[in-house]
Each structure stands twice: as structure tokens, then as C-alpha cells.
Image (cartoon, rainbow, N blue to C red; front, side):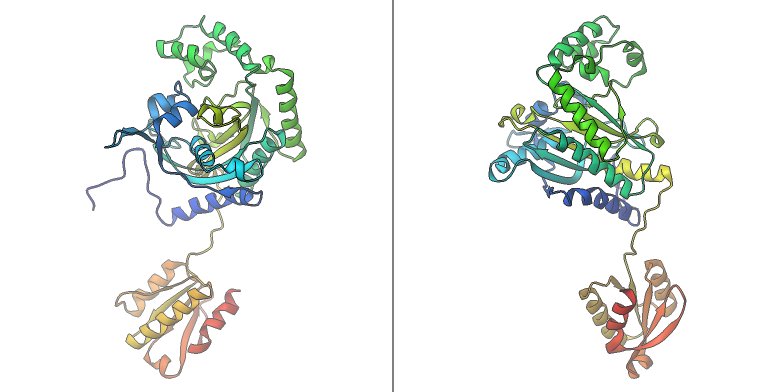
Length: 420
């Protein structure tokens, strides 16, 4: 056994469980690819300042959870704690907003890092699939992204999730609400850190999960009562478009996301089968983020869905994904000549798109057939000296147990026909 273990709060993805994670990523990405979103990949680390400006200096992510370090050259970098700021930085750097139609539609998949107290559903290293639509202010775009996430979850067989929806207003109406909320919060019995947060970003106090804080928030002013007419109309159109698409949601006037850059539409996907870590994904509109990180005004909207949390949600509902076998054909050679011939046939099968594997090492028939069973292959090809002398191999159907001799030169075509 190795003396090394995965760092605390992280995990390894290994077969066969890794196949489920891959299937979840593919299911989330599929509706995006069908809707004009192109794939983007950014570095695993960025400038600390990118997240301080974009995510927010008062957020727990930046103040407590970010893995930050200084390079030998003196640069201050951080492992990315979320995807939106990185994707927007990359889009601006490449001038994607200048070279094509707006919005620029991008999707991504990758690992993210936060120093948190590890528990089920919350890791220090986690996987997300995200989508961003950059450069357009349109309620239909907000609705599109919510609908696509709902479509992705339902394609996986998930049913017991809820969509929470709210509006956080904009630069016109939020300052009035912010002042009213600060007045309310300053009258509460809060610790020093939380009082500082009241001064910097009071909406983040509403997102405080501590029961002692939540009890005091009863009667807090609600943002929906302060929305300007433009924000009300915008939010109502988002609601109407989602409803018309047959997607159910719940209005949650207390919903705020944990990042500073959100404006107007904000939403969260929650699954009640996951206990305290009920959020499986979320997102919203972030019209001012581009300017926060030094770019032009580019109203944008996006979301990120947790692959880890989605897998847990599937387990909570007892949903088992129908995953294709990683191997369709397994070759078992008996003798050196058979090894040469069957290895060539395995290579031919792979070239025509059939997943095939081979019995490596000097195993006898019994041991090789055990490997064939473990591989999950539908068919096994067995050949020995006598078979090859007759110009055939033995083809065994692993489901029915039936076995038949097939010509060496016909085996590839035979398997193509059987496997479709």
C-alpha cells in the first residue's frame, strides 16, 4: 500500500464509479452544445485579484476559502474557486465579444478548489459544468439557461429537485434596498465579522447559514419590494418564459447567491434528498462583472452545476444510469500463434469502432475467462492451435452462453453485424 493518500477533503475518481461522473458531465453538456454554446477551458489558477474583484472581497470564498499562493516570480495566484470570472477574463482577453455575434455562448467543465470543512456533498476539490452567455441583456437568455439546466437534470432521470428564483435588482434600485437592509441589520445582535459584512455587502448576511443569524432575520426587508419598474418587468418576463416552457419553479424572495457579482435574475437548483448541502447548482445574471475586472460593459448570465452533487442526487433518488459497457468484445488467445492473430483482430475491431480488449499476460483459459466476465463484454473470442489450423475462432455469447465457430477472416464482420 502507498504511504500517500489523497489530500483531506478531496477524492479520486476511479472505475467503475468514474463512468457515472462522465455520463453526468455529458448529460449536462449535451443541451448546451445543441444551443450554440462552444467549449472553453481556462487555467486551474488565476490572479488573486481577478477573484477579489469579481467574486467579492467580502465573500467567504475570497476571505476564507481560496487557495492562494505566491510564485517564485512574486505573482499572487489562486486556485480557481469558481468558473465565471475565469471564463469572462478569457473571453475578454481573446476579444470574443468583438469578433462574433453577441451573446458569446460558452460552456466549460473542470475542477474547482475551496478550503472548506469537508463533509458529504462539500469537498475542497469539486467538479462543475458551467455555461455563460456574455454580452446580451435579454430575459429570454436567462430563461434559456434555466430551461437547459432543467432539461439536463431530467435527461438523467432526476425528478425531486426544485428551482428557486429571485431578482436582486440592478444598480438603480439595489442601493435603496441596500440602505434599508443595513438599517435593519445594524439593529441586530451580530458578531464583529458579520457587522463588517453589513457595511461591505449586506445581502451576504441574508445568505448566512447559521441558525442564530437566521432567527434574527425574520422581518428583514425583501428586495422584491424595492425593485424598480424595469427590474420588475424583466423578472416577470423571465418567469413567463420559464412557465411557458413547462418548467416549474418557486419564487424565493430571500434567495441570494454567495458571490457579489450577481444582478437581477438569480436562481438555485436544490435537492431535498441531500441534507444540509441541498444546492446542486445555481447561477444568475451578472451585468457589471466585466467592468469590475477591467472590461467594457457586457451584460451576461450563467450557471454552474455540481457534478459531485448531481451524482449524490441520483443516488438519493435511486436512479441508476444505463451506462454502456466499456468492453464489447474480449479476446482470449491460447498459445503464441493465437496471441498474434487475436491481437491483430482486436486492433481491427477497434478501428471499426467496436470496444475490444485482450487477455494480457500468460493466463490459462480459466483465468482468462474470469477476466472476460469481469470486463462486461458481450462476446468473447477464444482461439487455440487447433482452431487456427481449421481457420476459425470460437465466438461465445456471454449472455446466452452459446458458442459457435466463425472464420478468422469473417470474425470482424460477424461482430459488426451482431453489435449493430
